[in-house]
Amino acid sequence: MNKTYNSRSFLLITMGLLSAFGPFVTDFYLPAFPVITDYFHTSASMIQLSLTAGMLGLGGGQLLIGPISDKYGRKLPVIVAMLLFIVANLGCIYAQSIELFLVFRLMQGVAGSGGVVVSKSVAADLYKGRELTKFFSMLMVVNGLAPILAPVFGGMLINVTSWKGIFWALFGLGIALLVLNLNLKESLSRERRVKGSIFSSFRNFGSILKNKKFMFYVLAQSFAMGFLFSYISSSPFVFQEHYRLSPVGFSICFGINAFGIMLGSWLVSFVPEKMALLSGGISLMLLSVLFSSVLYVGGSIIIVECCLFLLMVALGLILPTTSSLGLNLEPENSGSASAILGFVPFLMGSIVSPLVGIGNILYSTGISVVVCSTLTLLFIWLATRNPVGCSEKSALACNQP
Image (tube, rainbow, N blue to C red; front, top):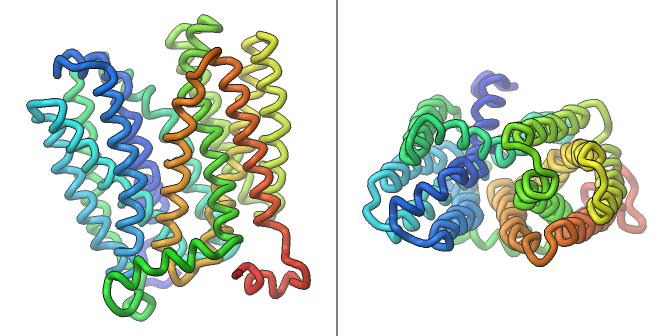
């Protein structure tokens, strides 16, 4: 590592927190929904809309901030994003109406997207090949845990404070991240930035979207995240209503499954990227069929949890490898590529999450995870196969359409 850059440890801590920032902000306040509904004297659907607003900001903001970071560097956009996040939290705390609360939730999402997209871009600036995969495996440990553990932490906090205490905690997190990023050294030199006007950066989306292999990796990760969101949105009903687990038992299962993602991401460091990706894709599909069958016949909670743990290990193999292999294909436009890699999975999550609530939740969850895992494997296969006539040495060149 060049001495003009931050240490690897600093980058891991800072980029890990940034990569988890968006999902954490989205899910942290979920346990406070009933209290916030009463506070604003509104309906549950309006409070659910605040979640949608946050996810829209989180997904769409990446499409804005990614190209800007390719033009102006990584440090300035992430600092502006952290300042916006601090202001948005104050807005949520002091909002006098549900309409204002929704506006500031949208701002929160846009601010959180800056952390998500910049964390990937900085990694792609500084690392390539196997080193990038190892770095992403560490980032994905945190990124995969965030949407799972955030509601658990939020539930613990709401027991000792009001719903505003949750947003004061997020305000403190924003201050801490701002301080960290003020010490972040720029990873994108002026020579490597997009030339011309800012609109030149946004025009790069066209060429990136035409890169078939890159988009195969994006779609593979998106459907893998579709599986994760299916699990997150259905698990309270499956574990607590169908299997009658207590909130403590439910939290324990969440923690065990979170460890599964951590284990899978850690294993990526020891095997070739494509081997890890293919192993994860095949395992995800086969285990999802088993998991769905157990749900269909009303099998034991122990078997269900064992299947889920192994599914999370498979997911941990997929998330860092799809990110690193995909971004390796777009080294000159890593900000815009990171934006696409961040936006599409969140779009997928917003589509899949409500679908598992249709009809019998055991059946709809089973169908959702099987479809998502099958399509994940399909796009992994399309992404990892070399076009006819491509040798291993020329494979990177052949990745371009």
